[in-house]
Image (cartoon, rainbow over all chains, first blue to last red):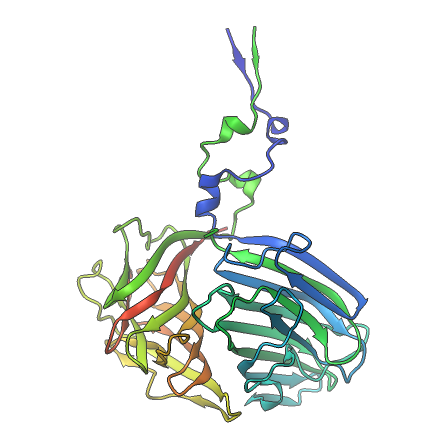
Length: 210
Length: 208
């Protein structure tokens, strides 16, 4: 008589999900985690350091986890590249609105925020505004980029972050727009307009592989 | 007595990961992708073409990826059904606000009474989408507990679009389907033309 046993150890050799399972998996797939420690920037470049940023997924999400800046004059932002990171200078048009409320109960304001939008700007798209370099200050939130590998459409992005700014406000910032290019976007950079950054940024692919 | 060991090949026929191994609580489960090609409407109907839109999941998520209209300035709208798609005419009350910014640096932030709805007609998700070759809209919508027979059904949509006036518009639309009948189908339609191209994906979000 044969005795069949299956124990946890029997599964330890699995290195990847079966294809059939992956096809129905709509989860976030963690592609890369980068941690800044007084760093000039963080970059995710397709094909470099195991980063996938192509047509493998139709949607990518970047999560900011306690990302911070080094001085109150800094502003964290992102830019994208169509040449594998050689240049980060794609034209972007975006909208921005924010709500803020102070620790002293001031504010309570909702407004369009022209300081953080772009009109065909090729520089950094701001991620937050009014940074705070206090030791406990940081920025958290996420950025979604749709179909970056398209060679037909502009590339839409939608972002929502919260930060405690230099005026001791809690500030939620909604930014959305498009990278105005029909070339495939294959790299993204996160950096401050001046100075260095700290914290963690995670990159995910969303949904089933294409 | 023989001892049989299991290895990768032993589980090659798995179609889902075990809950204990996958930790899938709260996970998105891909249900259906619709790919547009000059369609007048696209629908997710519970029980049809592999679509699940019932009490299997407490929350459903719809993703729009580059929905491109055949007509310039067309409006992508949605409606819901409580009779498996025979009629899309459920009473809805919604809010609609947007921020815009054009490539010439003009901007605005406004509530849009022309795009909200209190009625049974189609609700606007993306107004006046451009149809230049590179223009479309992308975003997502959550639909909460559509199978409830106790509560109204809330939905929340956020999209970004390339507008027909060549500006970017961040549009937020939310509201409730004012029905205590189970919602079991959703319709997507461009008002005057067709959905030239793009994808609409339906996900379920697993309960705890």
